[in-house]
Amino acid sequence: MSEIDILSFGETMAMLVAEQTGDLAKVEQFHKRIAGADSNVAIGLSRLGFNVAWLSRVGNDSLGRFVVETLIKEGLDCSHVEVDKNQPTGFQFKSRNDDGSDPQVEYFRRGSAASHLSPNSISDNLLSARHLHATGIPPALSGSSREMSFELMTRMRNAGRSVSFDPNLRPSLWASEGEMIRQINRLAALAHWVLPGLSEGRLLTGFDDPADIAAFYLDQGAEAVAIKLGPAGAYYRTQLDQGFVAGVPVSNVVDTVGAGDGFAVGMISALLEHQSFAEAVQRANWIGSRAVQSRGDMEGLPSRLELTAEFASRLAPTGERISHVGASLLAKRPA
Image: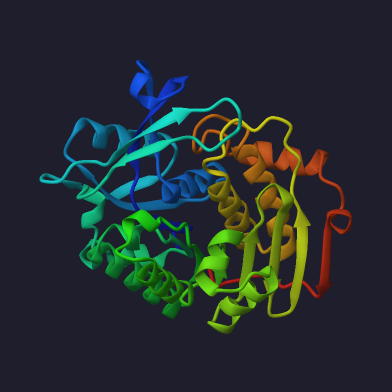
């Protein structure tokens, strides 16, 4: 059996989070954390007990050391993180919003060390991982990083490993919207499990209805699709099954950033444990609801103990929360 359960890759940035609300220009105190959708998912899976390898690049600077040290403390295998002597670690500023609205984020990542990821960054032992999680962010960073995304997803799928893909669109990083749509859909066609948000799915496919969006990706080769519907929950569809899973009510939304990453943590962890797709969406909704109740991008992601306690004590039987059609599909992949 592979020593690596999950391989994830991308850019982790240092993040300076405002301690006060209001315009970032007027904030005087910030708290240093890390940020990055791909590494958020990696951290969440590590907290659930999976052995996660992280592939990335950081600069030879204090922010790069901070990023790697933080990821190691979260249990990630960072032996495949390269240190770039010429390019800096990317960073961002994030506002503090106490009203549940989306925070203001300013990025300083152009030309960062992670944007210089390339197929040369791939070592053969990484390809022994059971599962690969990819997003649309690395291919948006640079041409070489995009080549690496295609290479990794192609080789892992050809090797019989499972592959998940979250479009995680970043339009400002692409030369044009048309190019973004074309490349993201090409990458999605390499994945078994595709996890778009509803607005992303509409933009990428041209369809409005979640069922049609899901059918688009199933026709491209996906085994299953889960479409995030925000607080309402999620719609899922496989070749054998489809349904809607209601969201988990949240009385106090603190920070919306990272909810989609929490959703991916729930989907991937449950499917690798051979739960049905409907059950995976149920877990994904709950972890997503946890994420929005904590300040920070990944601080609300649960431990295995918290996950087990929550599902043992609170969640109703599957039939009370999930309306579905047909037989559920167990997403089992080779170890």
